[in-house]
Amino acid sequence: MAKTPYDIDLDRNPANYQPLTPLGFLERAAAVFPNHTAIIHGTLRRSYREFYARARRLASALAKRGIGRGDTVSALLANTPATLECHYGVPMCQGVLNTLNTRLDAAIIAFSLDHADARIVIVDREFSKVMKEALALARVKPLVIDYDDKEFTGAGERIGTIEYEEFIAQGDPTYAWKMPDDEWDAITLNYTSGTTGDPKGVVYHHRGAHLLATGNVVTCAMGKHPVYLWTLPMFHCNGWCFPWSISVVAGTHVCLRAVRAPAMYDAIANHKVTHLCGAPIVMATLLNAPANEKKPLPHVVEFFTAAAPPPEAVLAAMKEAGFNVTHLYGLTECYGPAVVNDWHDAWGTLPPAEQAMKKARQGVRYGALEGLDVLDPDTMTPVARDGETLGEVMMRGNVVMKGYLKNKASTEKSFAGGWFHTGDLGVMHADGYIQLKDRSKDIIISGGENISSIEVEDTLYKHPAVAAAAVVAKPDDKWGETPCAFIELKPGTTATTDELAQWCRKHLASYKCPRYVVFAEIPKTSTGKIQKFKLREMAKGV
Image (cartoon, rainbow, N blue to C red; front, side, top):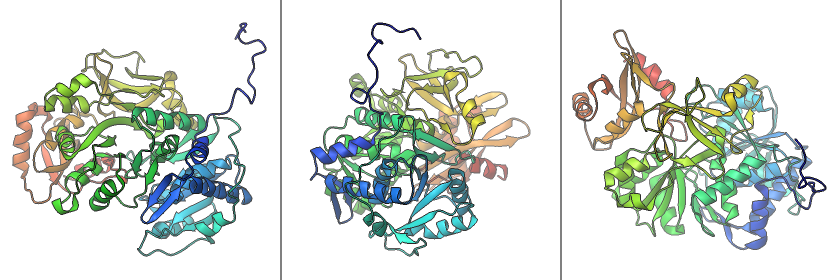
């Protein structure tokens, strides 16, 4: 690249260039608001001064054990203060944090530990049994640190050589933590959730974590000192980067070990929670709670949801309950959410049903994402902006992953043509808002017609007795594939196969209506995503 006058003798130096990293957010919060409550967990209260000191202790103790640039520290933890400390302490010594899904089985955990070459494992006592089994299967032999959370009252043995508090006590609270050598350095490793049955190691870098964390603050319109309730698992895309976001505005983390309605309502009422995130299952838990478990909200609470588009009926019920729902969209590969349904004031005057339809769209890119489009995957050209022409949702920018760990073929395939291929099928509306129609593998092709499982599910959700619905393709000799619906009913309600079939025929073209309806518990990941690959296997036997 040819130099211009603006390049000559105007070079990068430590005074005008520092690698982007989210680690400095905590340092600043502790300097500016040292006494502000950073963490609430049961009866525990920790200030930003304490939070920062403990993160540095952890970094120092890890460094003393030889953890440095590119070394993996795995953690199997609930939403606890230790998990927040790991998000800072591990990368502060240039290590890479690998947060493990707490609902995985031993074989998958063992695979993850081996694939990541885990040097140290921190494990909550609640999950010691599965971790013990995983370590017996794993090739690696990491140092195991037990975490004994005082809020956990169940059974669980210690399987490590040292307890977490004892371990960080060996560290220095004034430890001079290390900036990354390069902002492109890995900060965390996340394994895909397994909805496809094929987990991959997604690598995040410091630059992307910094940008998505600040992007959350802007997107969620967070003012100073928000109160954030941890209903989203911190292991999932590093809690959508909110462990770092909250430090930007010196907010308060309210930790929650388990997502239960009484605990959520108590936390919202007692701590005046302003924001929370979660999959639609969290909304269902709040809405379907018995009246004696609910409490009046202190104000309108901002709820950010992703995963499948929330059914119109659920969105309307959340608004009535006092929650303002904003629909986000993203994947593990883009640090969590990178698309937001930015709301227009004029839409607030539309009839409720039309508002719900607007809210069900995924929306437009975060300010931190440089490119979002719906493209024809064969030609890599944009589809018509008509809200009907189907294409693949694609992204590009600094909040797209570094790539898949030790998986060059998958990395190259996902970045083909200079775009990240999400695998999600959608349309582009005339106003530039995208809307998902399905995963590419979830489109049902029946008699040559494409059927969106999301459209069928949305219709089923509108039935007053339906609590959860999932629709997949069932092999069919005549049609090739035919829709098969799996249904969970709301407590105290009833519905028959014929009743639901008639309901669908009233609202859908006949070829889209499920020919099979199964009443059964729908398998989900710990983040509330429906595991359709399991349902497809179940449908074969229907």
